Length: 291
Picture 1 (cartoon, rainbow, N blue to C red):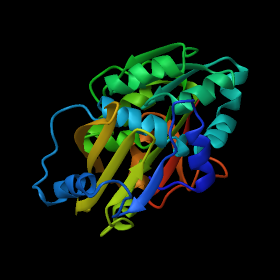
Picture 2: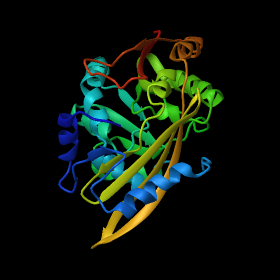
Picture 3: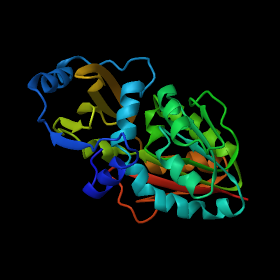
Picture 4: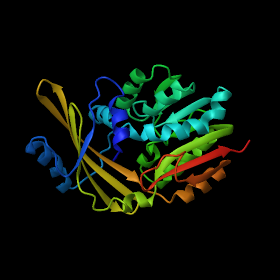
C-alpha cells in the first residue's frame, strides 16, 4: 500500500473532504495510546472472521487515502479497453471498491457495470460514480457473473477468495462470461508478494479524520495476512475504533493461464498493464476470448 508522493497527492485531491494519506513505519505523531492499541493486535492469535471485508470504516479510509493504485493502472487499462469503447461494449468491473477506477472508465466514455462484495464499498461507489450503468453486489465464486465485452479486476480482488478451489471456480465463471473477442484484465498476488513482505515492520497511515495501523505476516507460502486497527473521527474529538483481518491467497500466476485456456481465453502474465510499475509480487494478467 506504499505510494509515490505524486500518486498520494493526486488521490488526496479526489474530493474536497479527502485528507492526504501519510505513512510511517512503526511510529506515528498521534497520541501513543492510539499506536499501542493498533500494534497490540499483532500479538493476538489471529482468526479470520466470517464477516465481509471492507466494512464502513475501512471502506472510507481506502477511498480517501488509497486511490494511488487505480491512478497508476488507469492509463494502461484504458488503452487496453480502447477497442471495447469504440464498439460501445459493456465493461464488467469486479472488485470496483468505492469506484476509483470506475470513475476513470466512465469519464473516458465506457459503459460500466461495477460490482463488489462489500456493501459499504458499493454505497460509496454509487455516490462517487453516478454515471455507471449499474453498481451491484457480486460475491464470487457463487454469484453468477454477468456477460460482458470486457472484464477488469484491479487491486487484486481475486486474491481475497478463500482458497485455490474458489479461485479456479471464479476464473472459470469469469472466462465463460466474457463475450467473443472480449478482453480480460486483472491483477493478482503471486508467491513473491509474500516473500517480498516477510518481516515487514508495522505501518501507520494518517488522513484528516482517520488513522490506520497495519501489521502484516506470511503464515504460509500461500497466505498473506493483514491485521488492521483503525480510528475514524465521528464528531468533534470523538474517535471510533474498528478492526479488520484480511487474508489474501498467493498463487503461481502461470497456472492460472491453464484454467483460462480451458474455457477459451488465451492470456499472458505481464509486469504491468501499461507503463506503470506494479508493486513486487503483483502480476497483471491480460487475455482475450478467442473469437
